[in-house]
Length: 269
Length: 291
Image (cartoon, rainbow over all chains, first blue to last red; front, side, top):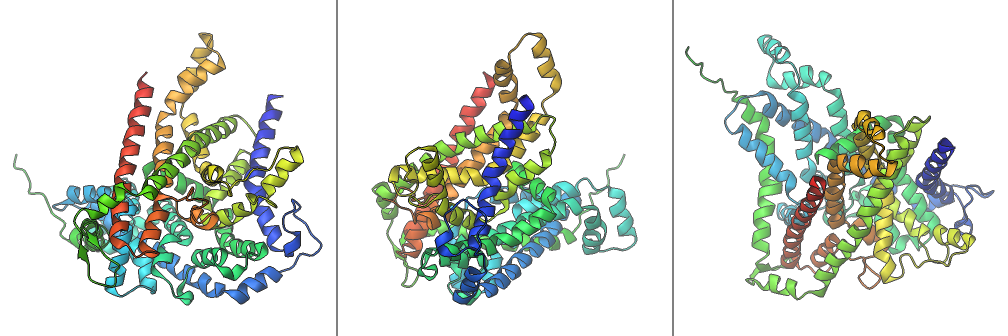
């Protein structure tokens, strides 16, 4: 009996969390007048809403922009993060502790303070409406540094010493010796920064006004609240589905990594 | 014994150089420049104008500033308890010997990974007064329709419910980890002492989950003061400014009215408020745990 109640509650929860997404996907394939029912099926399913979305906004271009921005950000975060994390964890230099405290301090600065001045900086540098403006402020993640540092501290010193004796530079030690041993932390940081970058809306809205440079979530947002979707639900839901699909596909392959990353970042962040 | 001279790795400076540049550009400069901006009036096009403390004077007389604080606190008052109850509830069910546990876990976590824009577009339809799924469901059960996002009283609670639906997956897992760390012996020995399940929950489970609850409080508070896309897409801050959030207000001042100085002042003051709220929460909750 107890088991039955537990399972019913769990299934109810699953419906509450999953059904809206299934419904969104189904509705995006339905003609406008049929949207609103609970049913996931209709005899008139078609890709017409998607055709309309592609016709009204440069969404393919936005997809490409988002891929460029999210991949460059992620690459930069893991490369620089590993370099700095390695220096903090394994090298001896004057000011190391001070630097670590500085990083912890930077983590605590609320973005509400830095948002406007960062935008001003972009204007002064004359790089608004460029990929650089979208990428630059997230090229280094302090949380990433802290996670790399912590993981790198557990790597045996003997390995690093052996690599040194073989004449390896710091860069080779980091990327050829330590990285292969640090897959969990590299994947965790990569997932976190890719997700944050892929889903970010506020910063793109601030620094990019040029339609051909907009990111996917940005263009979907402006499409929804602006006049272009003419308040047609089918189109909005189709655009939303296009934005959700890549992350949902990635999530279905790497569920465990996604869950572990998000939870560990929550605990540390 | 002679002490060896510590060996310094000079190459370290090369490795940390990118951070130094990054820090100067995206942390130090913005912090300093924010302190400059708060004393100026500036529309970003014409030269800055020194106005002394006028931005702060304006802030304490600005009903919308207080409105956005009240809105955020409203959000937190609903979001935090809801999140703790729902997350703890599911975590406790999942913490027993059941099949398909990981399948349920995966499903509950789905909204966490999806963009807030997607979630908001979806919920805009769920919340629609005339044709939304939630009101249809209520009509079927025989309950009158609720003006989810069209009434000023309900709009912010609706945002809080939506945000809970989106984020609760993280906290289910966090509570689950917390529950699994509680030793079974504690429950066994309290069973022998004749404690009821109710007593066990309040004297073992809850106190030992205190660290997780503190994390929920802090992250939710930061999240509440960072709300932007939800009100921006769902309600545009309305109706009657009832969902105007801190960040949405900064955004409006900076990019609709070009009041860079005032927007920076708002940002600075909101940051102070965030720290204050977190301090108060930590004090209260940590006192509770020592009782």
